Image 1 (cartoon, rainbow, N blue to C red):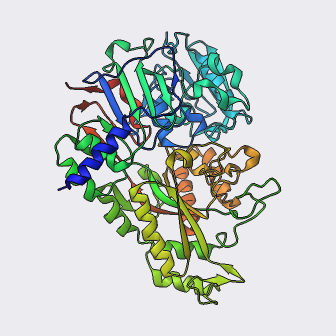
Image 2 (cartoon, rainbow, N blue to C red; image 1 turned 180 degrees about the vertical axis):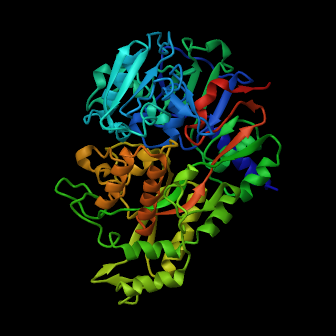
Image 3 (spheres, helix red, strand yellow; image 1 turned 60 degrees about the horizontal axis):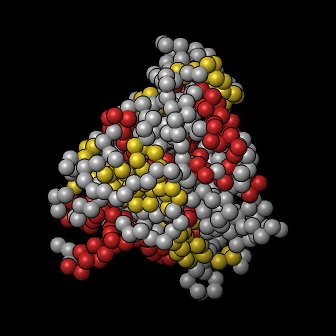
Length: 575
């Protein structure tokens, strides 16, 4: 049972969540007053969205919010079946949409589609989106998805053809899922360059989705109303949708499960001991949706303490003084008790893992995942010449102290995970300084901010990621040399650790061309094993997406291959 003081604090926190705040408000021409009832949907995203262009962010929080109004050609349901969205049907070999030689795919679009400003949607918007994403001046975060594409052609207003540079087994990656959202050419035409981040539509997007943004306070609140030009506008249940940020995961869970002041809260990184009694209140349920995501440690292969001539740290000019050595990374892996972390901090929403690639099943390696052995960790460090020569409790070698800065975002579970890992590393002679960064900064994708995932100003960072498509090609590409995030690419690469292994790249190149499914799966398993065997990164917990959902809310149908709001047009709420 919760103490009265805890409940009062929860209510106070909630009042702050739904307060007006003092941030700048961006509004479109339409506004609406606050209402309550079955026609208003209140969502809590305590890691608040900061931008609504999914091609300029690495944060799931931003993808979630933008997915309500921006749409791809198709997506995947929880069974891994492709579902058409803006497309009229799913391309196949049988219907001629997928070329037999694997070099192209043709999409037929639904007729008479319109953007939320009333302008017609056409194949030209798809072509424009491709050109904007791959333009090196725009610095988009999803450019890697489209590197296999040679060109995109509008055959007519409702037919678009994607040509690939080589036979491509991963034809379903471009324009599919949250990373495939289409942007309006008539809105972004003037921003197809280095000025892309200046576009007002990054914050007040024009989309084809069921609801349109009418108000946005970055880092605070997003307000939506029905899109009158949506193809099925008459079926929409809500007159107003609010996504509220701020607070923390625990107060968000209470708002849905205990007080009933919100309808849904996402990303509930809250210990099971806290969630269980809240769920027992009877106002809602906790939903854990397992997919391909894992919480992992990522190493910085460059030195965050050395700056180049321009004063920029973590560049390829300065390799890390000790994390480039495999024995150090192996010792860290051996010292971490993954099962204990999963059991104590995640409960039914987490399982210890050592795999880089978890789903789908055909790509899961059968090889041993991980070993917990602190004594062996100490032996590995000793054998590599790391001893405590000065008696300060931290190992050293050639004058270099084995001391790391370990950063992650601010959540109760992550801070407790940090403490557990710190204790484990301290016990084997590695000094650890903990650093916590607000999620709105860490996952912002802002190339000018030195505290983001891409810039990586620490030695180790922890976050959750995985493949967002049943085809893992783009996710596994994030470990290639060409994806290294550096200032000369405006930090747009997805390889934040700056690891580079030509042998791994060769495996990825082979998989990107292999049309035989069994041979291709074997290549992905080899890639996983290479990452695991070299301790390139340290997977810790196979983590479920955890949501708190009101008993009044209907139609929520999570899929691991898109964001929770992918089917928000089908949601409704009982009075």
